[in-house]
Image (cartoon, rainbow, N blue to C red; front, side):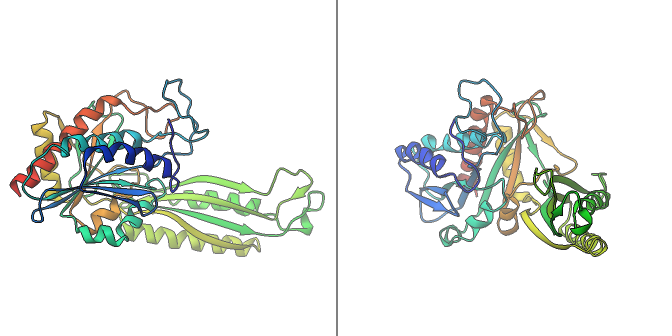
Length: 365
């Protein structure tokens, strides 16, 4: 009911702290990489360190449902299910507080700013996280359109590399009755939209898969007597490899340079929200499969990576880490839809699969 945007999760973290502190953790570390939080359960100096990760942030989407728990923060809502991910991870605390493991450490990571791709990277840069030196990092994401409570596993790559580019154009303002006395960037922006979107190769079976999506365009202001002198166009780019992503960055910059020379405009290209591809660890996947089987959950393998970006890829670059999917139901509305609502039936199986994974690692590794 009280969602927070990326980088502003102070209230969300406070609510979690108030709940989790009741369950006797060894320690709680706040303000990690922003408003992130580590909740630590230490069972012995020796043994594996296991991190269970979830995400804190909501989206700038207005809640359209009439649910009794609909968002009370105008223009902000949990339309990706991060509220459910937090509920699952927090649901481990009562169980962990009662365990008598003789070794190991379990860390619940409540990560900020996933949607803007800066949270995981910021957490990794914190010395307190580096000092943990995790042996395993495991997370989940709910996935609409998959059977309810099914466990979706990707061997190897799970998501593409994704980035966003903001191209700003600068010309010269003039009176709308005398546009020839200025330099209006509208035609240049039209040219860029057409040329850059043609770089897409939407065949997701191809290694050369690329999807270039225009997400925002702005030209001038709503003043009808003014011919605008500035504007911008924004794209997201996703590919299976960082190499192709870099090639597209360079090609888009070249197209922008050629177009702005043609129209005598100044420009800048600024990159935002870089999500590394998730490369799941084989050993982590084996544990997830085993935990799902012992939980009585159906396991589904995906043939190709999902097209969405997720900043969990920062963790898979450095540690043994895997993100798995939890089916939200075949009729569930898609992520980021204005009417989306996290399916609470996922909380119990989500908690159970993490319990099984933690127990297997600590007792058998």
